[in-house]
Length: 423
Image 1 (tube, rainbow, N blue to C red):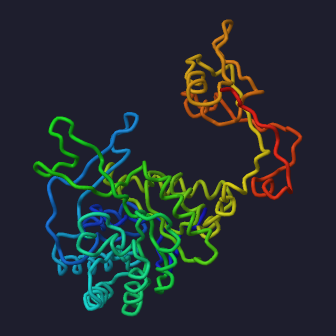
Image 2: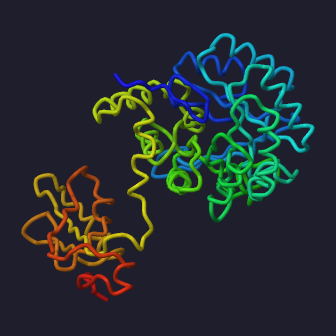
Image 3: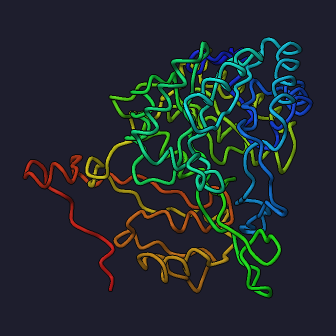
């Protein structure tokens, strides 16, 4: 059986599943219940000068009938006294000595950073996470993403934290930037032991079209908040992979963003994450979602011959390249399994109106005809098909040797003739 023990930048936990810094990690009793359910670690809800939160503060986006597929919040850091938080951190660590407690922090001056770091370590923190990503409320006060968007400030404050901490320091990065690399490198130059990403994305979840106010509504007003949940996973995977493949980076990554099940976790690990953090799925379904995550990851590792998490980390990074390095002579075409096709014609409509007009209805059968001479292998038909594995994209042996755009542009290789040229 695979060993799920995780070492993320020197922070050791019995498995890679951590609660992200958010309402599910707001108190000692909550974190203790999470550990009892099987979570390997928890990033405590961000500590700093306690604030007053607004009401209401959460917003949900329904996508394809799935409620909460996208999630938004305008909640800020802890609203509980620091003394209470530190006491509960101490009590929780004493009860669960083998589980990882990472304390998220956000303050302003160097003196404040020194004080809150020393108090966190004294309370029993196994690691610290510097919150440089909050996109609302705190950034207006010169903290959160206001720090995360400025590499020089990121590096400076990280260096303060590393100077005063005797436990590993992770830097939580904001996605509200154009390129994640300078920000990850700033954390590294500041001495961080690893990074966490992504934090939430600046957003407006929706608008009340009767009251003419954005959601979530606070009286007669609202504000932008942080977007998270299943819908942000592709953005998070991209940013994690960008750092993981940067040869100048090389730090451990705690992946965050839209992780809902064990498959999501595996994807993050394969693209470079050593641990994974979950928030929204726990808020929607409770702590016990981790049971399936642990079982699924363990079974996956056994079936693929992995005995330790480290063997998986970054396994897919090498296959992530720039567009100019993709093989333009590689070719696939759509194949339809006639025995499972239900004749809904969704693929025909999608292909004719949104793709390359290579699928056609037939009068003698419910199964559409694929014109392989025009099929460009775009995958749209497979995406809209409601029957699993009814449409597959099959590689074609077209006789052309692999060639990339970069090779073609230098005259080194030739590209196969184009297909799908219908107006």
